Length: 127
Ligand SMILES: [Zn+2]
Image (cartoon, rainbow, N blue to C red; front, side):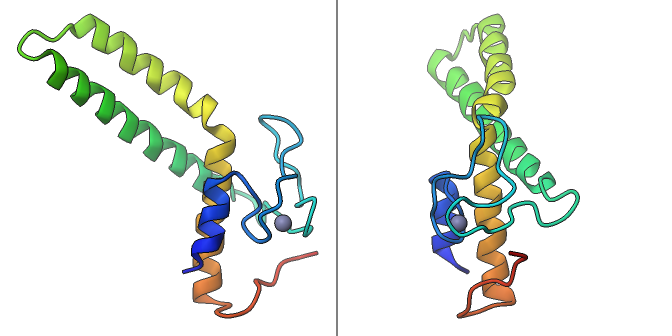
C-alpha cells in the first residue's frame, strides 16, 4: 500500500505528485492534475467511492456527536437539542467535506492500485 498517495489525498492534493492545483472551484475538480496531468476520474462512476467516504464520515460524526451528547448530559439528555445538532451535522458535514472526500477517495484508490498492480513503479494512466 502506497501510504504517500493516501497522505496526499488526506491533504487535499493530487495522489500521485502531491500537486495542489486540482480544484477549479470548491465543488469542481479538474479533469487532470495541473502538475503531473494525472487523469482524476478514470471511468464512469469513479466518484461513487467518494460518496462512500462521505457516508462513512457522516456515520462516524453522527455517532460521535450523538453518543458524546448522551454521555455529557446523561441521565437527562436534551433529545430535541441532540436531534437538531445531529441533523445539522448530517446535513452540513458532507457539503463542507465534499472536496476532501474526493481527494481521500483518490488517495485510497491510488494506494491500492499501486500496491496491487504497479508495485515499485508509477501507475499507468492516460496522459
Ligand atoms: Zn499530480
